Figure (cartoon, rainbow, N blue to C red):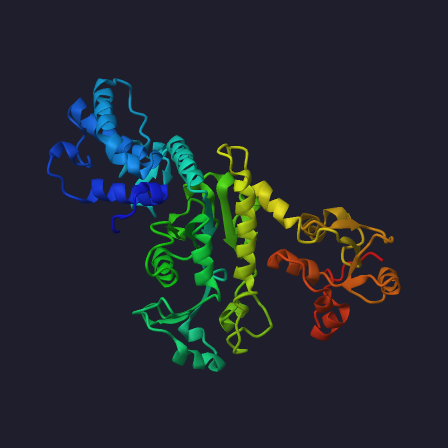
Length: 470
């Protein structure tokens, strides 16, 4: 791990801590009183003071402007030495390294050591109260920079990877199109022979990261292992200017097979998540922007039991200006703008979760939808997930037709409601119109989701032969 070169004022807490811990834990010191206690406990109050001082130095750097650091440091730190020396309060053990307190050096019981932040530094843990305190500090810093936090998934969100042995014969042409790993800045398709895989970056990803980094502190959070996560970060961010040490893998999570914001040093009300899998974030769905999956390789389609051909098989790709990442970037800009609008200093009442809902409600605003033979007969229509999704997108849902209805969502052309819609020149679409609006974050052309297209594709969706409403 390399020491972060940026000032703490211009980087997030995780990078600051990585640099701080590396200095304190890995480097040799000229003075024994300045060395980090790993095997021996401090012998006197002076050594305790030194360790408390180091922690306060980090806190101080996170809360002042860069130009003020040198001017204030000498006076402030001298005061803290005096305070630490005279304090007789018991240490609260805010964090541990190897089960030893990072402040006083005492051994701490395993169950008291708190949350692991192994992506910051191996073996480091922080007590929940300390994590809350660091998030509060980070929030103040981010607000001064007009930034929020954005947690990014890798696979099917920013890129698509496949094991080389899973390449289909019709994909062999890709091997001649790969870019050199010696200079990845201009490439988007890479052969990682030492990992036995090939990776394709999603179109627009470089522009997306560049623009998003102006508004957000960026994290990677993947269910892949740590070596994979760091290698993908090198492809996406070869200069290390976007993610720093904020690369979280499944090895760093606290809940098996799930993702959680408990290891992200940002307040939940200021964190957005971009992921293709909603179920990966059971406790943070209100922070989540679900993106359409990127299926470049055939193995990716097979993984999700899709019968259509992949982009590589079609020798095609997503559009840069109109693709999923370009659309999501607009959503991020809207949400960021709403959070910081009016330019006031007191943003304590702002919450990205409510603002994200506000942005979503603009997608189908003005649409009134009636469903026909979409829900099982005995079910309550208002409780069906598709009904709730439509309302979340801003549509008004109803069970009966009237002149104010704009769309009839159906799976069969033979229903009374569909015949009424055709007669009254209303839109008739299948449920894919709502699903697409949900995943693409914009209203879709109705002509692309007519029932005739549904028949042609052989994709009529009925609820497992359950009787449907009329």
